[in-house]
Length: 113
Length: 113
Image (cartoon, rainbow over all chains, first blue to last red; front, top):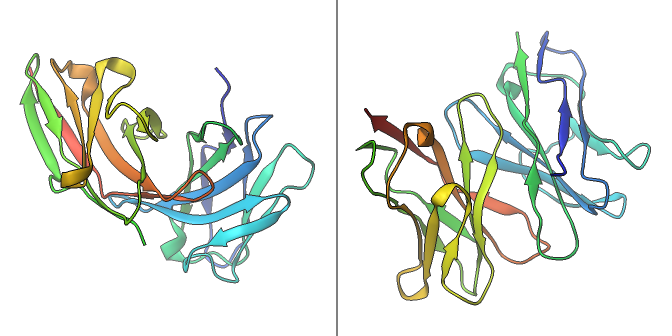
């Protein structure tokens, strides 16, 4: 069964550093998403991406965040200057156009120290 | 805007007993409804989804859910739980096929031997 692949599975970074979280969506999917889950809390929507541009973003997705689909297969989330409160599990998801096949990756646990 | 309420933070059942996890949603039109399961440290796995048609939806791992428009509910059920069902369960709602999905806060299921 096709999977959404996320790397790394765990990343530790110092406060103020830039991080890039990587995702490889399912190959024929057209819609891409990032969500995050702070430990013990619910999963929150960050951003959706379609046709090489952001479709929608939440209040969480401020100027410190950016997304990119650099090469037609990868989908990345960049945090420019990490804060302690960015520590969370970040999930990538992708969806096809027909039937709402919304698939999540296994997540990247980001720890900001 | 849509929202999801999962009134039970924790539920404990004995292995072999039946299970029902509650989910209530708020949305003006017919929603797209989902149940996801998350094992500790793992990603989000789709159990089942409802878009239209038969209001009783069958999913993986022996789970089912029933959409009740009059009660704005989409409760998850399983006739006989297994120890491996211990996990966190998230109900989620989407406004349409192109939209983000909004998650509830989750219900953690504990299984007694």
